[in-house]
Image (cartoon, rainbow, N blue to C red; front, top):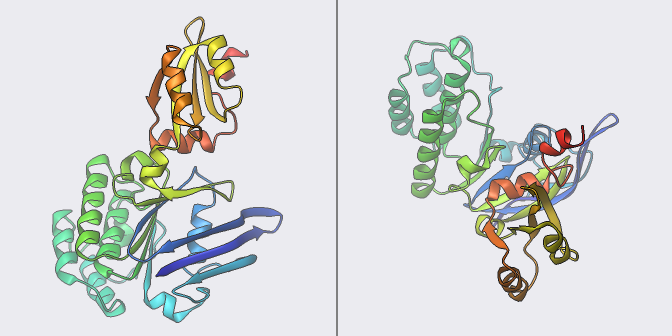
Length: 300
């Protein structure tokens, strides 16, 4: 069953285009990572899916319906980000109680256990929490609500490394015990890739990649060798990234869309062939240039 479907989705703010002709679908009971650099359009896309924003053109369907101001979508979805505004008159403990009235699948036992684990004060107020503690409390609501569609937009903002790891672990365990459709946006792919089944990469408002995590890891390979030999070998290949290595060497990342015999040829020529991390692949695909920051200084 398809939970989210976007077709030629476009969003404009006056003369600025936030999304352009974005098309993809997300199936039921999957964890999809929405990956992109800051300003790529991730939040705009998620808020359209959540029904907060209306697209400028194109089509979006959530649970088969237009999500904008849609009660069915609102009842079956929760949107968690660092801008959540909770009732200022309610303590944290009271907020959990009130949240249980909004979400039919709410698990108060889970909420209380997470609340205690992260050492929250029941009489504290959300507005008085630090940025990291706010994010942590927000994720408790997102997990305990158990909505059919759960959207986490950069949920770990302000959290320290240990708390982020705890959240990812809690998310995975909760998903395995109570599957639902989860969309998790981040620009830190290396922290979440083990959680994900699919990756949706967007850049400058456009979809760049949408595939299984395992497929992404095979999307490109790294090859290094002598300058001239590498240039000849890559002459008809798509180069995602390249840099100088030593006095006469070059390292390139090439799209892995050629027959195995070309890879065997590279190894026979003495080239060093290496895997490329999923995060680096996303970085190279969305980079403005095929070089790195060192190129800025080498041209000075």
